Image (tube, rainbow over all chains, first blue to last red; front, side, top):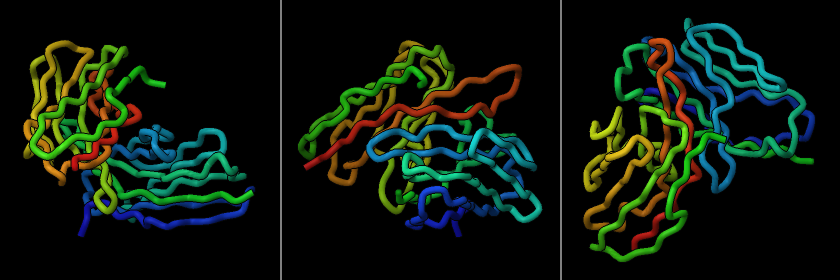
Length: 114
Length: 116
């Protein structure tokens, strides 16, 4: 079993829909949680960065962490065609040390249709 | 965008030849990383650096070496390229602030490497 599981999709939604993207993990030591967006032929771009549990909101994006369930979510409100991309989750523990080792999900491909 | 430049952006080469990829940053960040990204495997860490001349292995380091002689440059070398090293290679950088060691990583736009 992988340390981080992420449904690869593809997920296809109409413009304006609310999108929910999720990752589950097995290591209870994870404290830092990140969501990245990757457009085709580009590098991953940091969207959200949260520490420990709770919610964080930035514009149309909300990141949610449920440590008791080992489950993180990214919600996109009023989705736009420009949100079409692959979304990657990543996480690390407090004791990642010098290597800043991130554990990555495989990514979920999202298509928002006009 | 974080000031990260990867070169070349695309390269096609033959099995057995040496290949060097370059990552240049203008952010003065302490940490630099090399990843490869492959379908079904996601992002995998090859090597990373925590300072000038300070490097260590990641999870898929066999067949790769790195060097960091200046803060801004991190080189990845394939000494004798093999077809299994055909991939997209990403450089990332991160820093530490106020004693918090887990700052997020920021990525370049990658090098597409094909080994025939």
